Image 1 (cartoon, rainbow, N blue to C red):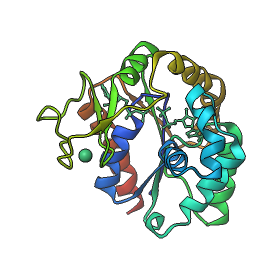
Image 2: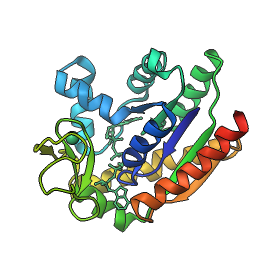
Image 3: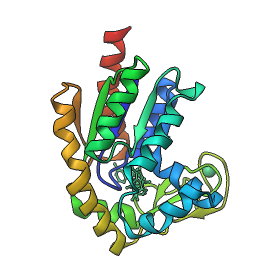
Image 4: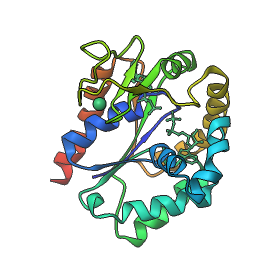
Length: 221
Ligand code: ADP
Ligand code: ADP
Ligand code: ZN
C-alpha cells in the first residue's frame, strides 16, 4: 500500500504515521526527518537546507525530489510506503507521479488531516520528541505516562525543533497554504483523496485513518 499523509505543519502527520507504519508494515518516509538528518551530518544537502528550514520556507524541489527518488527504491519500501511531508508543491506531486509510473507503482490513498490554524500554532509550540527514538509528545495533549520518561524506549532525553516557535510557524503555515494546498485538486481529480477531522483526539484520528486504509486493504486483497 502506498499512501500520502497530507496536512499543514503540526496537523499530526508524524504522530499518525507511526501508528500506520506499525499496523500495515509499510515504511514511513518523512522528508523533514531526512533533511534534519542531513543537517545534523553536515552534508551538502544539509548545508543548503538549514537556513531555509529555520526560516520556515520550503527547500528547493530538485533537492527534495532526488532525495525522495533514492529513498523509495530502498528495500524496506517493497511492501509500500507512507509519505509524510512530501509532496509539498505541485512540481513535487508531478515528479512523484512520474517516479511511481517508472517503477510500476500506484498511490492507494491521499489522506488529508484537517486542523484549524489556532490549534496548529498550539500543537507546534507544545511539540517535543524523544531524543533517542523520535516518539512525538506534546506539553498538554500527549505527555509521557511517567513524567520525563519516553513511553516507547525509556529514554529521559527530549528535544524541541529550532523551527517550532511562534514566528516561524506563521511562515510555515503561509508556505502550506500558498504552495502545498494547491496539490489537493491534483489528487482529488485522481479520485483517491480522503479528508479526516484532525481536530479530534489522537486515538480518534487514528481510528478514522485506519477505517479508510482497512477498506482499501480489503478491496485490494
Ligand atoms: P506534523 O507531523 O503534522 O507536523 P506531529 O505529529 O508532530 O505533526 O504533531 C504536532 C504536535 O501535536 C505533537 O506535539 C503531537 O503530540 C500533537 N498532536 C498530534 N496529533 C494531535 C491530536 N489529534 N490532538 C492533539 N495534539 C496532537
Ligand atoms: P512539519 O510537518 O511540522 O511542517 P517537517 O518536518 O515535515 O515539518 O518539515 C520541516 C521543514 O523541512 C519544512 O518547514 C521545510 O523547510 C522542509 N521540508 C520538509 N519536507 C519538504 C518538502 N517536501 N519540500 C520542501 N521542503 C521540505
Ligand atoms: Zn523514546
